[in-house]
Length: 371
Image 1 (cartoon, rainbow, N blue to C red):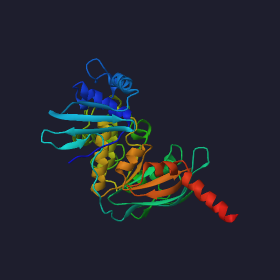
Image 2: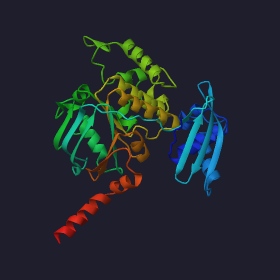
Image 3: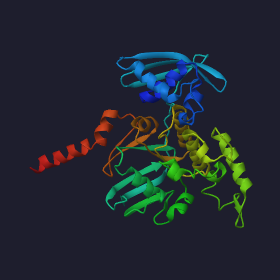
Image 4: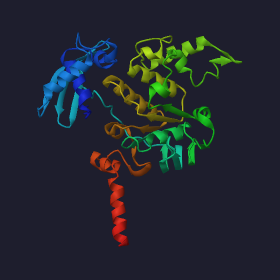
């Protein structure tokens, strides 16, 4: 079985050069190079990427080969870099090949709507309209992606759905329950999980331990508390379970969140939100600032949650990410949903809509008809 992937050149180059130098893909790409704990010998990942860019500048195509060593297993890698991106395949000794950066997604029949948004309006921090009459559903076992250029109302939409911003008007329902005016805590308790777009500002308390961060939402409930008394050991035990399940590396339950790499910090956020078993998971910029290994892991985890029947709203500025993971794609422009597509839509079509091209065409047609 062969699966191919097109991805951003910078990430692919870094991974490929690491492999070419016989480094561990996990070690080279799986941690934060700024912390000085990874890299190939004396070459940190950033320097490798710089050398890679210089090596391929001006070339029409480049082919790299080598081996990937991860968790005791060795795989052969063949990668071709082209103008438009990179295609990478890893072949096992048995002859099976799999993609480095994209997981295979099987089609599913979605269930009933778990997230319903109707005529939602919200203002930004200046009081100006940011979300304008947005309506859509996300059904059980479905990933709905929102594509759009940054600052077109995506952040305000996420905040209105998760209770962080009071909408000017409109309805948000989760599992048939109206969330109007119930606040953030009750919104989460109603079945909303939120992978925040800024993990440092809203996803984690960096000065807290991993155990404390895992219990941020549910510290009022058993087993974390009993008759008003917190149970520190319950926090530690639960954090240990999630660290193992979600493959969080670089620390244990009593490690400060600030000590982890960006990818492992994001795994902690995902672990906490998924472990609460929400009906709806809002994933906002889930791979922002992450390396190749962490991106691969999070993509697989999102698809697993979809397959388990969760309704997932994916908001990302990475068009490739939206197109590869989503079962349906909504295009947002100037606070409005201007188009809806299946996964077979082309990048060119979505790109035009993200810039308002289709809306302008429709306005021109109406103008000509009026004349």
